[in-house]
Image (cartoon, rainbow, N blue to C red; front, top):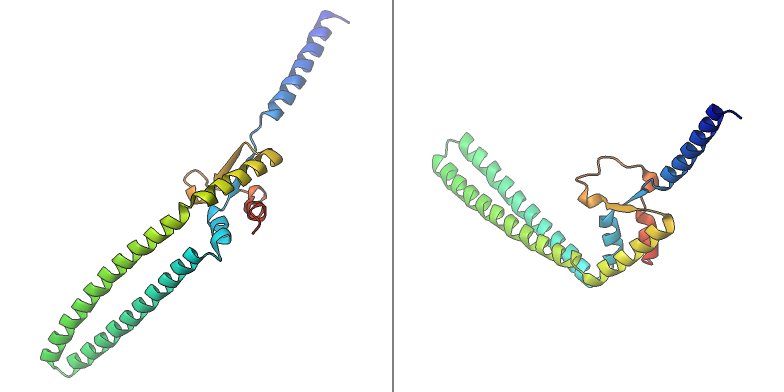
Length: 174
């Protein structure tokens, strides 16, 4: 074997070793829809039922108030058609007042719901359990990184094949 052939064989050997080494360094990613995991975990808990109840109560009240406003608008249109300016003015004042109340009510209730949701999401035992299960799944599946779809600032696209949400829910026993 001449020296040129030896160099080619040596170079091919190092290329093969480098390729194998590089293949082992490829990072394996997974994604988790933490919102779905959270919903599955807390679905039957009293705090979540309370949150859902308050949310439904709030929506019912908004619907009721919106219907009242629509009736007032309809009455104002009828009064306008009859050229009853005094009634139009009175209804416009009432409408403005009720719209202002509805806006303030909506803002206050949304803040209340956000506060309740944040308190639910900051449940330490849930997150400790979640971290434990994610670690187990990552190590078992060879994942280097697991991303949350809720913090999707950097996740522009992902293949469903890397979504381990169902596996996480299953590991949590849900």
